[in-house]
Image (cartoon, rainbow, N blue to C red; front, side, top):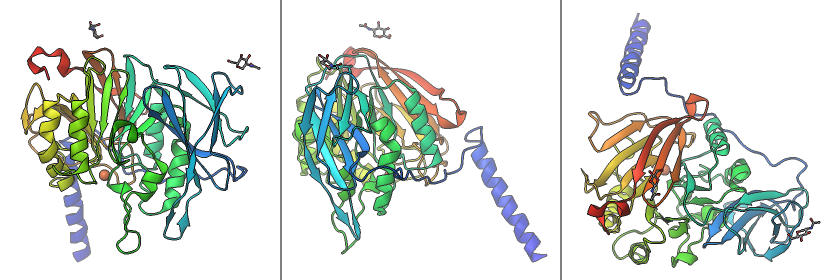
Length: 430
Ligand SMILES: *[C@@H]1O[C@H](CO)[C@@H](O)[C@H](O)[C@H]1NC(C)=O
Ligand SMILES: *[C@@H]1O[C@H](CO)[C@@H](O)[C@H](O)[C@H]1NC(C)=O
Ligand SMILES: [Fe+2]
């Protein structure tokens, strides 16, 4: 009898819960995905390149990053037709250790100058069995970005990557939480192999999330060891002294990558660097400005409320971004999608940035599906589903944003909206 009562109670609670969720969104949400691992192919020689990914460096160069299990030259050969390498550059190698794990040889080579909007073929470490190719971003608008955060390595990640792969994007922006290795360094290797088919073909520009910190008290005190070693970004080119924050121009967009998990207070290097960087922007050259953080400054999900990485950073930096007329602020961290109207200081403001949370890549922790009720007016669209977004910046005044929900099976845009730049609004002149 007691057992039955308990079952009835559990059932009632479950039904009440399902009912509550059911009135927030109208379809069945997918469960957290199964973890997948991407092993090294058995016949791959230890000197063969793996985990190849590329990132843009300055207006006309590309950094090629890859790992070899054992020693191999940090050499990239490249050219504009397959198997015909007219140029070669030697770069640098490094490795790191983490507890008992010792990484392979991590190679970074910056190649260029390259022509915009052009396909290049390349090979790494003189390995003729693996030829790669990439397309450089255009020098002028239009440009298309893929945007996705909190990727992880699940079957949802796989379907997100598949949808991104089917699109015709020029550059990927990732607002943190990449591999969810969470101290298990081999998961970083697995992640590198998982994303290689896409990340070796288009520049992947990333910033770090909390899952990149990987610190263990007393035993491994240095944060971001694997992230910094494996995902070197072009920070020096923007006058930054840290791989954790940097900026770059892509066609007509100035992109600012911020670090939510390093110092951001008014006396910090990051704060001073941001001030200087915002002061240098030439709106004639880059009519659009995007900023990217990990922990969202605006968020009506019940997940990740009250975290200093969001609230304090917003308190310190929001005015800087507002005064500089930053158009869009992207964030991850919350495993869902949410788009705000233009906001400043908690209120709708026509000259404030649009805030977008896109932490829906597909990680193993599952979705964040509880929202504040009623919905605050500044939140325009919110939904706990896995997916990614495409942002086509058409010209100096117009861009089209398309959020794609994975569980539609086919990649269809579920939230499509036109944005106009703040530069094109006479009331918001910087
Ligand atoms: C290799 O590329 C160069 C420069 O583009 C070209 O002149 C040459 O004919 C190509 N060689 C072959 C064998 O295609
Ligand atoms: C920018 O693109 C939008 C959307 O395609 C178009 O309506 C507008 O006329 C374009 N502006 C200019 C200056 O070309
Ligand atoms: Fe996170």
